[in-house]
Image (cartoon, rainbow, N blue to C red; front, side, top):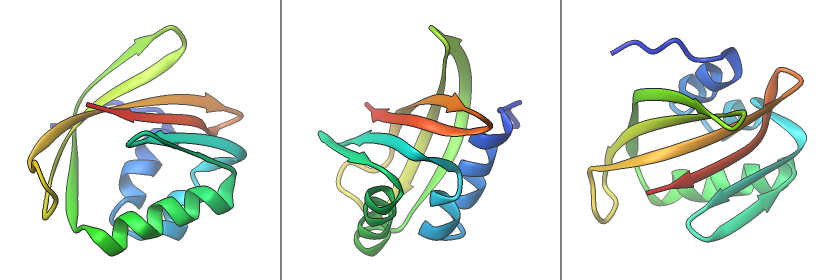
Length: 108
């Protein structure tokens, strides 16, 4: 399924398969990511978050649907891979700033 996603969000999902450096370039300098009960603030912390996830697991992420709520874009994705509970549908809640991702919260 092809979704019409804003450029920074489409770039994020495309970068997932390219490595942590490509993912980090999608974020503003002071971006905040919340995932699995942890908060990562700034590009260095986001880079570390992506590197740790890539070292632990191999997975694919398929965006299934997208909606706008309260100024945020919520993309529901199916993640499949070598992690406990696979496959799982997760919600990626994006806040955009100046053409990049300013905030991302990932939840079940």
